[in-house]
Amino acid sequence: MKLQERSYSTKILRPKPLIHREDDGSLFVIATSWGQPEHAQRALDEVVKYVSAAKADVEVTSPFEFLTCLSDEVNYVRTGILIANDLLYRGENRAEYFSGVELMAIFKRGPQVAWAHVGCPSLFIQRRNQRLQPLSIGQDLSSELPRPQALPPLPSQLLGLDPTCYIQCGHTYVNEGDRLVLLASSSVATTLWTRDGDSLDLGSVTTGMIQEDPDSPFWLGLIDVSAE
Image (tube, rainbow, N blue to C red; front, top):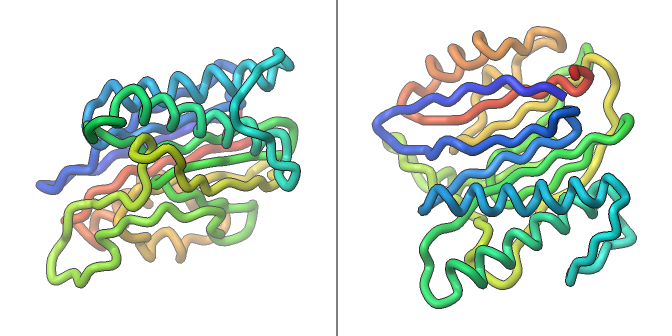
């Protein structure tokens, strides 16, 4: 898998995520810190370490059980996030809140793409010759409020604030030409929904989103699932 990304900033702050890509393109981890930047790196490192060991069939132990209703690949990324949450909560936020982290992990093995995330970005897929379809949505609390003007982003879910965390996860199967769309924003621009099946170009989509709502910051990523 290969990622292209754009970040758009305004007077309103939206932190830019840290991004990890495995050399073989099988794993992406996108972590956004709301507080201390190094906490996003710690969470990212924990997820990468666990998933890398699990996919290599290294015997790994975890205090968190595998769920039989999920595929192995989904369990890998889900468990990695649970470990990262435990690390941040016990190490950084147990006595006093210092920061939280939004995190998305995407793991591809064969034709299957598995994901798990807490908070943004949201995940969509554009299958070849089809329009955009949502896979999993990361809510932004500012979208629930009346908008006479652009509001600062307000994450609804963060890693590290509680001993447990709400993880959205799942998997799908992909074919050559399919693309994943990652979006961290307070709203989903109509320019994304109205694109034809093969017209999802990063530059033109970014321009359209800025024209539609120039005061709202966002981060946008496109993943070609068939690229090395």
